[in-house]
Image (cartoon, rainbow, N blue to C red):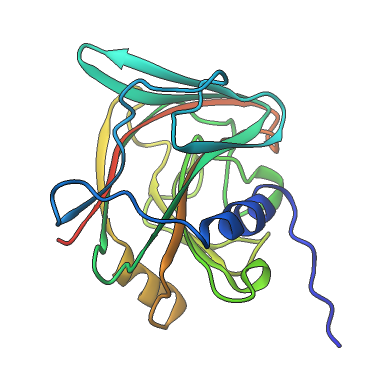
Length: 231
């Protein structure tokens, strides 16, 4: 009988801790039937700075999470100093019904030499993960990661060397301006079919991450206005 390798680091956290908790969850649907609002980070947070409705996942080092305000707008702010952490939220819905993921993000600092293509440098300032649990979740869950890498070029699609069922798409890299908001929109349904060659199961959850522990450097990023739409 073939042994199943134990998952290390951030991907073990995503595929086991996050995904199993998401199996019994319900999505947050806004008044508009065409939108599933994940969060607009309205300023409410717990004692650790984690926005209400999310859970902290800390893998290495200290987490620095803040809700910041810019004029009348609130947003989520991460700072990583040789650390790996993120927040996860319980959502459950058919991606076929709400295929388009929308969000804003900006990077203040990229981890020096960060490159998703190598285990030893697999650090990114900003990562958005969508989980698709399949039984048994600990070994069959598929994940799509939309990442802001440093060295890997924009447009790259990379299969994680930590977890073969995690496919990362590099949306931003070191050529993009720092400290500037970028609006993103992805058809997650089409991305899933292209990456995995099958119809996706229900979404199990979403997480936002940052890490810089492999490169022993630091990173900074912000997230805002995360939601799914029908088109």
